[in-house]
Length: 235
Image (cartoon, rainbow, N blue to C red):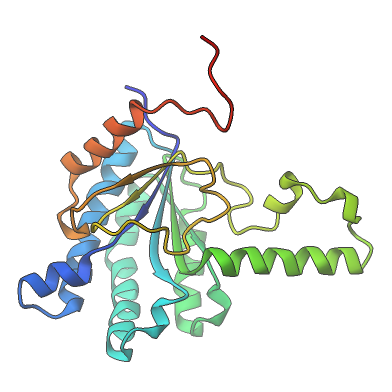
């Protein structure tokens, strides 16, 4: 069975899932962690090498303070409970985003997760946390401008390949498939550079209900796509 090398997911719909059940939004986020566990396990089993998930965006700070605090607490609890299992299953954790602006405690949690899983090779779980595509691109442009100003890089040396080296994902292949759950049809500032030629799959299924069967629907759709990367196929 052909599987994409790199799958990325916008895990949307936790809040609506909870609201439909007359529960607080935190309940939906907690159930969403269970969906993530299922997808991580299945991705590893079928040979997907990179799974990137949109966990917390730079825009999510605009949400009510109680929800933001609950999300941060959930992140801490998830690593406390799940890290050993991730290690045992050969999952390497990598975080992309502006981690430097998080609290020292949260920074230590991410650093510990990356350090303790750095030798695992079965699956890379790439977590976009405090991440935004525009922020990432602006950050890269600033770094390139500094390199030019300091004489470490000439303007005519700036190419696509050079630009990529200044992104959070500089050592990763671009996503082959990007999935958005929850029924919304927008990019939401996710992997704007990296997703230029990704295949997109949108589903109305809310993230806590996204199971292996729903994931297989997305993978089946991907297998039916003809990827041309801007060219045409000769007949």
